[in-house]
Length: 127
Image 1 (tube, rainbow, N blue to C red):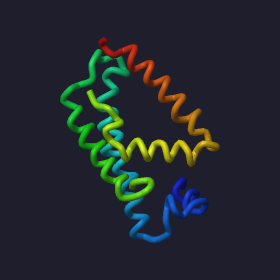
Image 2 (image 1 turned 120 degrees about the horizontal axis):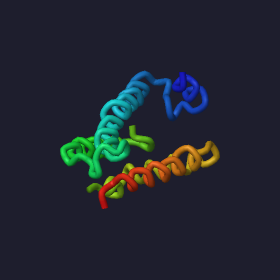
Image 3 (image 1 turned 90 degrees about the vertical axis):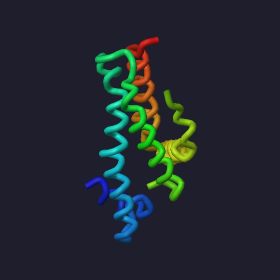
Image 4 (image 1 turned 60 degrees about the vertical axis):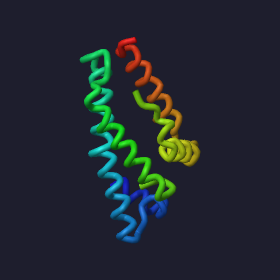
């Protein structure tokens, strides 16, 4: 439903061309399956208070998922202990989204919530 809405508002985000649309769909499935899963597997044990350190065995999967996302982003504007800054395309993509969605609540829905989540995570993390 959301994709139909976006395709009417902005064909660049969800194109009418079926091959391009298939690429967008693939990236969306990658996001919800591979990327999200690896992020949750790495960060949730600390967030849920199950442990004071992220599981080291989950880091390679997270790094692989971030590298693949970074590679996706090299091919297009929206792409379709680690430092996120090493993934230069992800940082550029994030800044672009922030700029494009400035008037649509990006700060409120993303950055503000990310700060809350970060504080919660750090409060559970072993120092």
